[in-house]
Length: 49
Image (tube, rainbow, N blue to C red; front, side, top):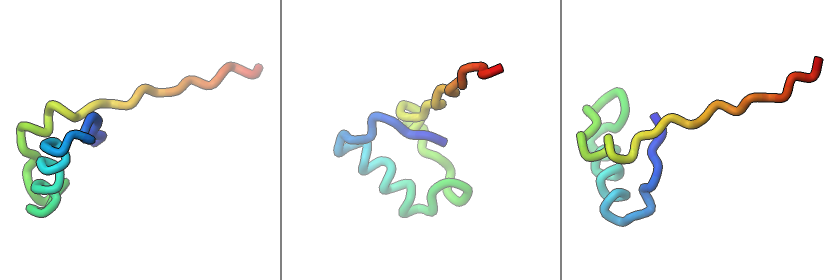
């Protein structure tokens, strides 16, 4: 899972609180973190054939 836009102090505190509870695989992700979840784009390499 990727989180973005978490430089805001409130967002950082949301992440820290979740990690203190155990984080991924241990504690359920708080719904507020859904606002920060994103999927990185896949880079395509140029065809060199």
